[in-house]
Length: 157
Image 1 (cartoon, rainbow, N blue to C red):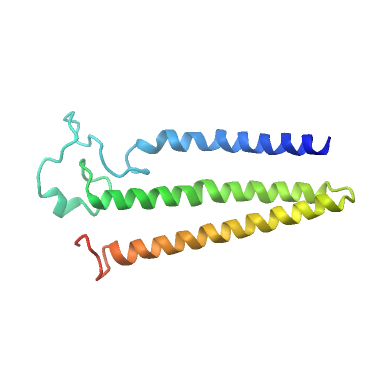
Image 2: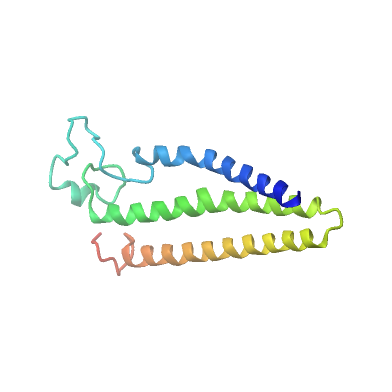
């Protein structure tokens, strides 16, 4: 009985998170979101920059050019990582903290459920710490080696 209720609760949380996250993936291909290029900005029906000078003038500003360049690949990777950490992992962590709190409050003296709640708390906490540490590391590497103000920038200005 207890496992059935817990399984239904976790399934309902997963379904709710899935319903909430689906619109983010649907709107991922609109301008100024996850993908910074590849849109027909000037409305001529072609995804092609009007001049070769667009690389020098606008490529460092997202959304000002139609064609995709290497900077856009790096920016897309950074946008995907930010999306996964801040739009998926953080809300999912909050939901799991709430689930652990639910287990803790409804334990009715069951030591096994208290231990499970503590385990969920610890696992979510360490998972978020590891995810944020990975984000800080990747963000530092991208900004240090590929950032516009870095002297180690391999992509130009």
